[in-house]
Image 1 (spheres, rainbow, N blue to C red):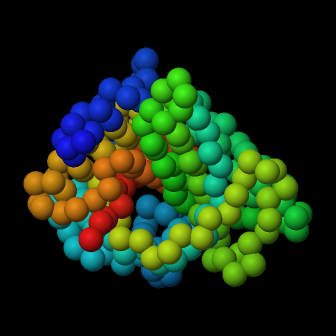
Image 2 (image 1 turned 120 degrees about the horizontal axis):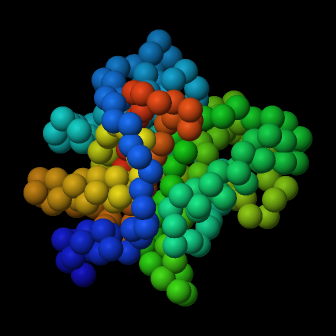
Length: 220
């Protein structure tokens, strides 16, 4: 399937009935890093390490992420919001002590979500919701006691990222994924168009200066 056809399919495959009201706001400077080397939009909590390889336009950049472990769970659902809610709560229980060490693990950012549109038997989308494992647990990661949670070790990854602000609805995620795909195609860059990631950096009570991202994995 041609990339532009798949991107059009994204706009149709996982659209929600109604979006949340959005409070628009700028998400800050995307290349503003704190003293520990984390972007300012991580808000002082643990984030995966990356370097910016290139800037494609004012909203889009290419990053190289270091190898890292993530705690994940998979949900089949027709609705983005309910899938993320279900996955988030399972992962939150894991970091709250539902692990073989019985330890509480610090919250990190972003909450990432790999979206494979329409993969389920009744056209549900496949959502894989993930928390980044904090640096102190990267080498010895507590094992989840819930069999729905699994630990994934991602190798070094080259990622194309589009950033945007506001309280994102499903339509916002899809629209920005489509725009990212079109920008990459226009720039002649190769990427895997069969799925995309969403990445949210803010809690539900953050009203302004929210930071959201959509990702495509780069291909050689």
